[in-house]
Image 1 (cartoon, rainbow, N blue to C red):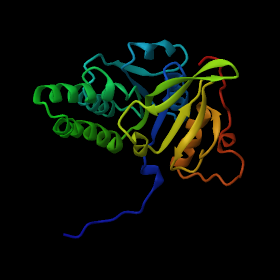
Image 2: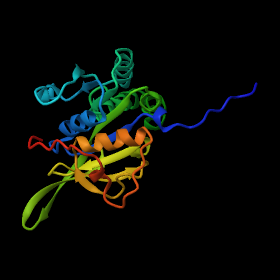
Image 3: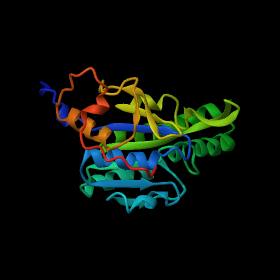
Image 4: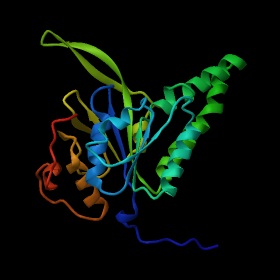
Length: 243
């Protein structure tokens, strides 16, 4: 059988964006701002105890609240439901719960390891669930923005304690799965740590609607040729004070 190739078109691609930070650094609000800039009908999967409803006066979006257990199969079902409902963008807030939350990958692993006495074999039982979730995210017809908590630590800077983010609280190398990874600091600035688009690599920028607008332009083939920071190429930024 002869397999058929087609011309590659960026417009066929869907965004996979990860926002990583410690709790309280503005992941949810930043995700909503970027989604607004992307344009289209927005849905949010909320695993953060109803915190996704806090910004209903600032943005237009629909929400699905998920409570424990945070089984990866429930995430897959939510993605499929968002696709069937005709949404353009799905915010997963957060992807951390599927891994380290109650009923997530780590708790399933612990339960199997305790029952069988074999921690190594237990990973073989649970990692297919993790892989199935990531495969669903990558294959989805939606633009997906996933928030991921990072493990935290405290350092002393200029004589004052400062909360800093460490590794993402998810599977090792989870960032490899995404088109673009933005790490948020306490001032809600986005530090680009991975960028397949070439738009933001190495930049530090406010997480505004402009990021979504730029990514939407890029997905539809617009070329940015200036040497200026890419964030300056989108016009009409709606800078708010609420984080």
